[in-house]
Length: 183
Image (cartoon, rainbow, N blue to C red):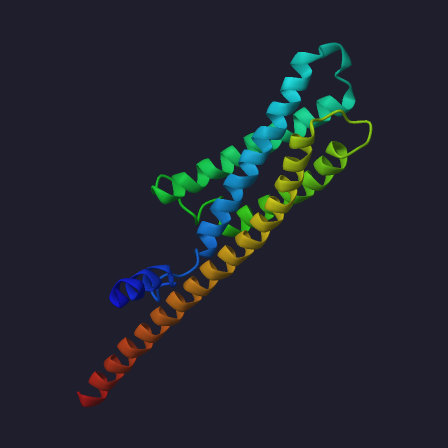
């Protein structure tokens, strides 16, 4: 029986081979969370618009724009990430990691305004949509931080590759110089 308890405790203990998600995976996860929250804000606003179309005022339209705009914006970003992963699009083109970082900064600013509208006293947005607007705001902040970490990791990888290439070039040149001295 002692062996059985030891086995169970070893299954519950964290494995030494397990690590946290990469910055890229964290960024994608945060983007999917914000995409989902945007969908709920957009859907709740649409539900409100269809239930009481006469009472849909400027707050209602603003919620619709912020939820739907964020949904479409993140759908495109997730599509571009997918296309880069399946190598149908290249990261050295216009959709570089730095461009995606600035897009995440813009999304964060977008949701700062969106949350201020969603949480206004005169706004008749459902409480679920209001809470998810905050999720979208905080998620977009996480997206921005994760996009920055992804950008820095990619820069470090490229710097290491450049340094390796320079070392290989210097070794080739030193061999050529050594061969010329021998002749």
